[in-house]
Image (cartoon, rainbow, N blue to C red):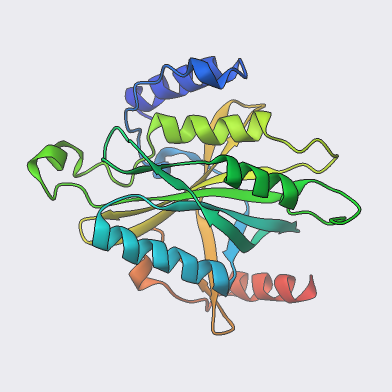
Length: 249
């Protein structure tokens, strides 16, 4: 992460992550530099068609209501690919700093996550990838939000703290190890943008996931991270290798 604001947010986040007491959050909720300034997390993420349609539904709902929506997406690791294949309940509405209606994780969301990620006799192959995914509406619609018009695609330090907290403190009690990702769908300058980040608790830093794909009508398509409306079918050899990997698994 680059930029003094981002570095300060990272210092504050890591300071709070030194303790598991979630009640001691004292973050300023400032927005940090865009993920393009983060180091890459060298994996590919693929949303199946069901999850891709859910992302589109979130996008339409946010565009129409100007409030946030979100959910946990679930998937599995297949080689160097994180294949996202399911979701359950949406996050709840709660008071936010930047908008009147933000999202927050509920007890039901957490219970569903436990059921889906704990290794048991009934669930011998649990999900080992969880995406905390939410949307940011296009600000600047009213005078109250004008100050945040150019910040919709940036994660707040509260967002990033949540992802770090999940990665460090919300691992299953069984031997299953989860990779938690943070996902953000935002509208800025008329473009719908998607980004994903990963927190490495050993290096105490955030990493950007740039290789994000989805399945549509049997085709593997890469998100244009800065305008999902311009996504296109994969034509290069990396896409072919990825499709073969998914079919082989």
